[in-house]
Amino acid sequence: MSKSRLTTDSKSGASKSRPTTNPAPDFILQAHQLRKTFGETEAMRGISLDIQRGEVVAIMGPSGSGKSTLLHCLAGIIRPNHGTVTYFEQPATPLRIDQLSDAERTKLRRHQFGFVFQFSQLVPELTALDNVAIPLLLSGHSRAVAYDQAEHWLDRMGVHAKRHQLATKLSGGQIQRVAVARALAIEPQILFADEPTGSLDSLNSEKVMELFLHAARANGTTVIIVTHEPTIAAYADREIIVRDGQIAPDHLAANGPRSASASRPTVNQLASRLNSQEAHHER
Ligand code: ADP
Image 1 (cartoon, rainbow, N blue to C red):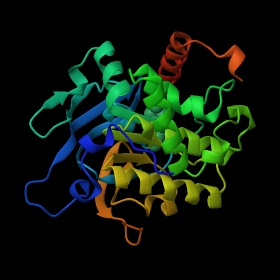
Image 2 (cartoon, protein in one colour):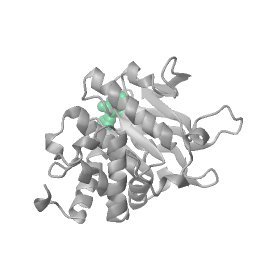
Image 3 (cartoon, rainbow, N blue to C red):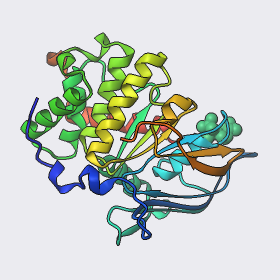
Image 4 (cartoon, helix red, strand yellow):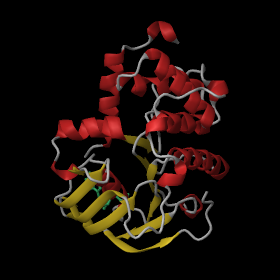
């Protein structure tokens, strides 16, 4: 499919966005000395990290080590008790995510960030196409542009043929592909993924990851992905290991590829549903 896309040209192309050895790195996200406690539990105990624009970073580590807490702080879903998270939409425009109000963080997440979770919740009574088009409609795109973009991204994720299927009729792998298409369609600056293929078998999981990261890299999207699977982390530019709420020295991935319409809810109903899905992940 060769649909023209109206918003991609403003973004960096893949060649510009890939991490380089440039001595003046172009950071998109910087976290400094993050701490977060839940009651007696210290989930993060002084985490600092820098992420370059266009980089694909895998956050790994044992269960309970603080990976999701870190991801949620970086994405502005939760606020750290201590430390800073700075987001650079442009190199010269630092924005302290940890200081934003709830409403500002919601707006930032809606317009600049994409999310894929382990059990991605599509709106069941809508088709795959509608599910991908909704965030585009909510962010103000015309119907024609939203559906054009949605078709394009479903095609890129290999599920264009399923576009008119209701979400309830899709397989687990198809659901995750549609969820990735939905997250990438708004062309986020950063895509946050928490065990995005954790509910799939390993073959499906690798296929989805390959398509996902290929599309993200081609679009210059920065990706931060929590996973416990080394085969998935191998697709990243860099692995960050979290243990007991702290970062172990990071290292490069060794050998990864571098490279039913009558009962449709209204847009407002869908907006509140999306909000409650996000709230589900807020703590
Ligand atoms: P991981 O993603 O590595 O499995 P998490 O970041 O989910 O780890 O959790 C780190 C620690 O913080 C764990 O001990 C977990 O039980 C605790 N924790 C995380 N979220 C909450 C919460 N909302 N309430 C209480 N404890 C939490």
